[in-house]
Image (tube, rainbow, N blue to C red):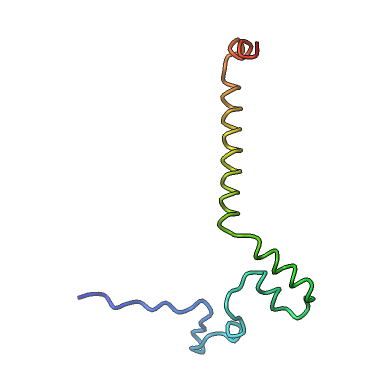
Length: 97
């Protein structure tokens, strides 16, 4: 006989009242900081236009690829530096001639 599916209540569930907390009802969909700023009435139109230009300029996938390339280059430099330290001094001196 298969087990009955288990229903997991949301984190904001209150067992005492059997409902979701009022605070959770006030929170709308998850938004990135840029989206929250754009929705803010406190931000000027010029600032919103600049923020929009910056947001459209950056592609998260390309940024992540650039970070990975930079980290790989640093790791390679560190590896080469470590290899140089392990070579006997006579070998290093001959290579520099």
